[in-house]
Length: 382
Image: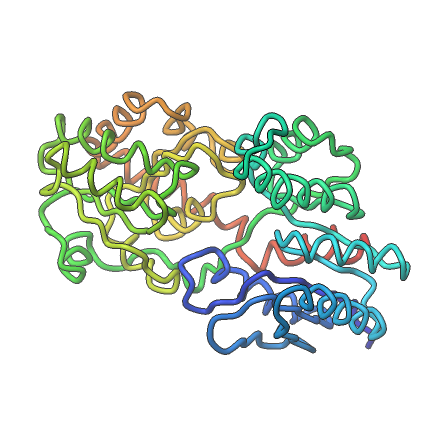
């Protein structure tokens, strides 16, 4: 039986990554159950293992030779019968795949799901930072969007964002949601008390969890202020901050300046394969981001049964229910955000209802349901 062939260009493989690439490995394995899958891995940490993939090629060249190596691997995939290239975020992958596809009669699809434009300089200027951002970020992204046969993104609001901000033709945009492995992110089975004790956290204090990169995009600049507001109304509260990044030291300084050391634990990076235990110990999850596309952290929280407070950015309102949307506030509104956190901490019954709502909602994003959507909308479309 002949099966459809797909060449998937992955920017990074890391089994113990704290980033979303830990989810992508499972996605690729699910695709390999239905397709002849060739994976080109641009960068890897540790051994690359993708069960079921027909071919897995790891880039090994350095410097400018990497582009030639990538073009050669793409041509090999095309000669092997691949008519569809799918690039996950990588600029060089997106541009090279599109060029090879146009020359050889294949189709190139490019995945992007984020509000990148708000961080691009408004205009060109003879300053190193501006030139670097324009030449190494904005221009390559624009080429990926223009050269690819279609842009694949996660939600309707994100599709509208690319039409509005990047002038991408709406007919050129395909929507495929992110997925989650519900076999790995299972509902918590132990009590919050027991889960907190296992992690060495105070079992008798309500726990608010933040798990993301510590950068302005993800709202790191708001964490100390949110914690201060919440503690004023819920003195026993404990915040656990998981993640690292450019604002890590600044967040520590803000916590010390506001005298919050007894209320905030900064735990650093935790591999995605281990974060489930922290969700299981959390009374509430927070995502005060200034920028998102389709945040997988909200899928993780829902799968385990943790209600959340989040900001209205990217495609968030597309992936929550009306009941959950009551706890989605405008970005940067610290007072409103903290108010919703306090309200939920004081209402265990409402948190229980939101947990049940999350269980129901997250099922539509199970990898077993999203994989057929990807195949029909991308692979068979191509």
